[in-house]
Image (cartoon, rainbow, N blue to C red; front, side, top):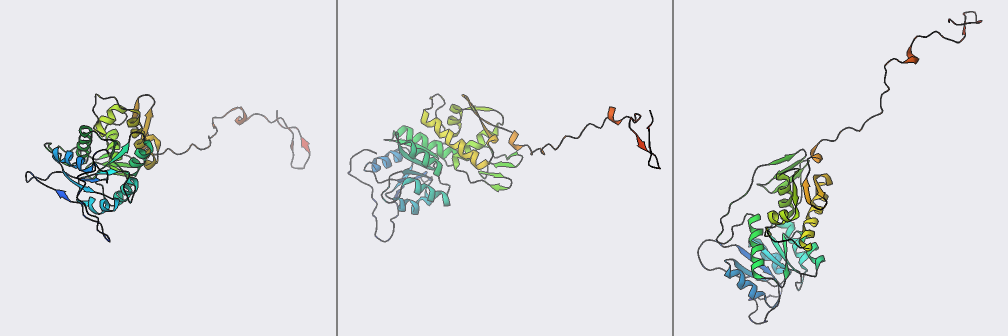
Length: 305
């Protein structure tokens, strides 16, 4: 983030224990989505004010330890990768062990590795720095819609709750769970959203642009970048690993992806040895024997003709 170093966050780190992030709440009595900004950059106050202008309650956590102690009351976490005590990937991993709170990571546009690591650690989305306020707010709204949290001035419309069953795989949108052979899969929010979207219309081919729009709420008329395309690839690859069978999600080269039903079919028994055809043949006919047989007294005599 860029900006002046004045008017920094009002967080005091107390030696011997983490400080609580402060939250400013004003306006109508209706609760506003609470966003925790995990960053120690000089312009973090400007970001906080941008969020408040768009109707969000905001608090700042200046370190990884404060973030871990205060994220429980937040509806979303904006996570910087460069915190003074812990890196953003580690903070994301720790949060994911105890919470499904949505997380958006801040990354440099040149740091593709950071983006991939954050997504693999459980981030729901990533935003390039320096951020653009309109894009950031749009991505926050998209993530909150996907996780069922009401956005300012937006109704909460909910979503599909019908169970989807495909042989050993059961997808439960209401509980946001996917179970394979009775075992609950450990999926990030975006992994579940992607799996559910594909499985809702099995055997249909989804283009990358369509998935970015449906799952990441990316503007449908904007052409996706190489980075955003790789975001989809990363999530698909992770899903395949957790499903244990690449046939669940197949890649249609040059087009997109498809949820296949072939993986749901029970395994067919391996073919055994082919039984010989027992239809009587020449060898089975009762032809006269053309060899000598021995008589009861041991003498050789001609066999029948």
